[in-house]
Length: 103
Image 1 (cartoon, rainbow, N blue to C red):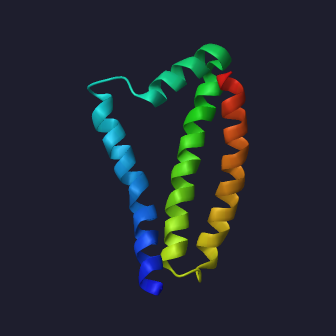
Image 2 (image 1 turned 135 degrees about the vertical axis):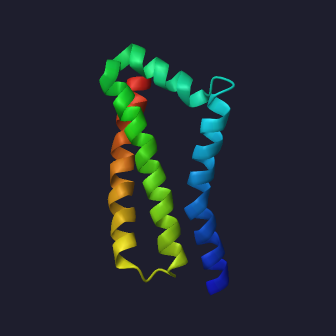
């Protein structure tokens, strides 16, 4: 069971970095879905909406990475758990405002 937790935690830790790298590579050749979202939010809410959308993605990156670290440590790392809880709370709030700005 511990090996399974470590493997899942490792995937959760490295997948956001891989996703970011593929996004940056594909951005050079074509318009991505997130770029369209940023433009739409910037048209509706201005720079505040654009910053909120970028902050939402950053918090999601931190949330998934810290969750992976917490699972890899087999649920014993209290610091990672605190980061997961705080980042989940901040992600929910930023997601609400990001969706509100998108409409």
